[in-house]
Length: 135
Image 1 (cartoon, helix red, strand yellow):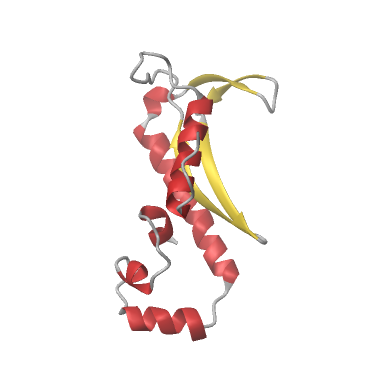
Image 2 (cartoon, one colour):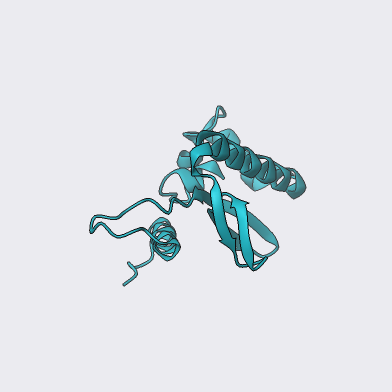
């Protein structure tokens, strides 16, 4: 899971071995013959996602403030996060969680919007999947 999101994943066991203490043949055997409990993986994803959010919030206490909540229809005090979730069948995994900084500016001096952030995330996913560039 880490390998697929940390670098361009080519679907090779060698890629997995770079992030594991196990030999690549052991990983290959596990993936083809091993029994795994998907609920354990899902729990690990949940724990890692919350740990990442906690780390972001601890490092960026100065970016907390009042933001409009579209869900609640009012201003709330907190962070604005953008997350990318990838899904296949009944499994959903967090690809990235980014803190939105409304003071960040692009090269033209314009404020980077949430839509700009979503476009950047889409381009990243397209590139990882090896799809043609987006317009």
